[in-house]
Length: 475
Image 1 (tube, one colour):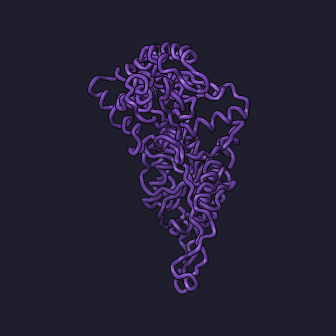
Image 2: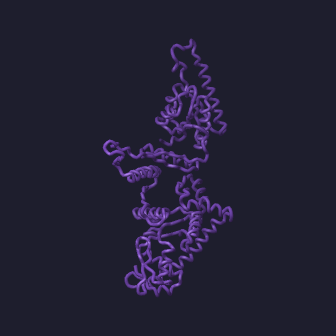
Image 3: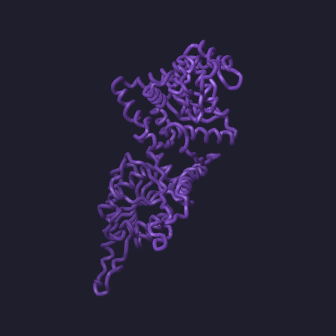
């Protein structure tokens, strides 16, 4: 499928209401693509398909052709109602509809059909000629079944083939032109095993691993999008699969941790200077609200930092002071079609509920400035938290004991805000996953220092334990 600069949008007409719907749709498509429109009527000799016993002594060929030309003229007029400046031409072409439109498709940018025709296009029913043309045409085919939705997404199906890659590229261009969401769909069926009912009753042995098969099919979907990116000149393009199950913490935290691990590993492979993340001011405000709901302290309320180093790779967020609406407007101005993660609209996730319900309700009640104010609060707390973290970093070596323990007396002398940060950093050193290490864990550690009653060990994420013995905290 080539660019075909200057090629027209072609629409087939026969005078049916469906054909006029197709003409209007084709005109809008031509305007959108900045291309001319060509209206075509396939003219069949009247005896084609007529029983011999019904042959008329005089063939009204001239009258029928005049009617066909009139249909084309009316279709051209209908197209110009969509845009008076649209370049529209019409033609009556001898031949059957499939043959005529296949020839037209060789020099067309898009072929538009009605879903049900009359006269010269009587066979254009979905499932017959429309299917033939969709399969054999040399350009994309659009079947007009009803008025197109102006707010709907562009949906493309992929199967991993070369033609599928072309379809993804076409869909990207269509979504970008419309400012619409792009949905890439890949479907598959689990293999149907041979039935062993007579030998095994209702037990059917499976010769495949369903999880492995699903992972393979997901790679097909990812590669379809990556293939378009490579064709668009992006390099390098890599498809990364991550496993979320089995990680500590909730599903959102586990997925985030898995993504960052994959991104950091890729950054090391390509010696990248850093990883750019697209979080905006709105994302920051949502993070602060979620932290408030969890009863988080200054660390949680600090939100996301502009820079965070993970395994020697800087994770950078350059848009934290930019509104999400502004980033979308910038994409539209640049002709870019950003991908919308469907999980962001799934009410099963707390952040999605905050985005769709909680934050808009606050904006309605308190005004649009609430988003920027929440983000600014995060920035102020981040500065204070950084100062406290620096004090904790300096204090940790002073309270260490031989081995990997901490001095209870040394900890007790520290201000509470510094002490809890020391305990948090130490717990991470012991192997507790940051995503699973909560306020309750740190509070229990602090109680071993400030509220000692002979209590048992504190259990940390990852199976680690901390106990108090002879004036020390020991793992």
